[in-house]
Image (cartoon, rainbow, N blue to C red; front, top):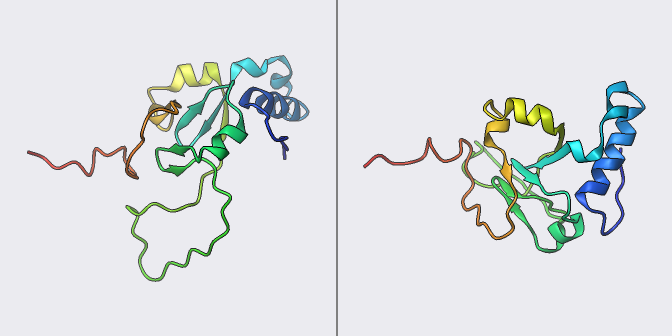
Length: 136
């Protein structure tokens, strides 16, 4: 488990992760934190952005909020409609940049894109929208 302080950037988080993993994995001792990327909700988060900024601006990813700490009850009865967005966020992934460069044509890395705070990621989709598009 890695704990961040208010105002920590993604780069500082990745350095904490790298040093934590280096205790278990020898190959992580020779990797710099610049060679790691953090992926959250299919978005590659830039290293200069802080987690506080992402939380304060309620940043959204492709499948919902990037970080959501609201307290609420989500009671779903019956069949779950997968087209309806849930407030839950998925765990993030830390990968080596060279792994991403070698595998960006393969799922799940093929769905990842660099986070742009100005971009509207729109409606919730499971398959990137290609399944739900209507043919003309």
